[in-house]
Image 1 (cartoon, helix red, strand yellow):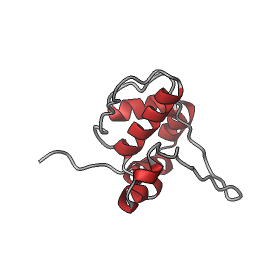
Image 2: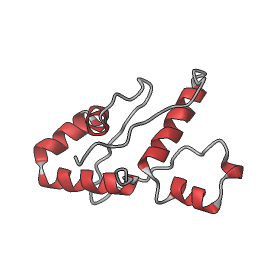
Image 3: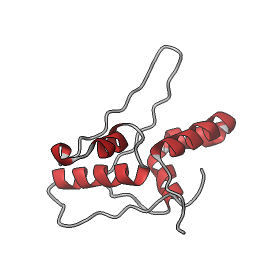
Length: 120
C-alpha cells in the first residue's frame, strides 16, 4: 500500500497550524514560500512557477480561484469538485504546472510532480 494522498486542504491546514505555533517558521514561509514548498515536496519546482502566501487580518479575506482546466467541458462532476473544492494537491499542482508550461509554449509532454514527503 502506497502513502496516503495529501489533499490541498490537509497541506494548508498543517501550514497554518505550524505558522500559528512557530513564529520563526511563519517568517520563513512569508519570506520564501516557494523554497518552503520545494523543501516540503522534496523537489525543485519549475522556474516559472510562483508561490504566494497571503496573510489575512481581521479586515481582509483572501480567496483563490484556480486555473480552469483545459478540458473543462469533459470533466465529470466528481472531477470538477476535486478541482474547485476538495482539491488534491498533486492534481492541482500538475494542472497548474501543465497550464503554465503550455501557456509559455514549452509543453511537449507530461509533467510529473512528487507528492509531499512529510509534514511541515
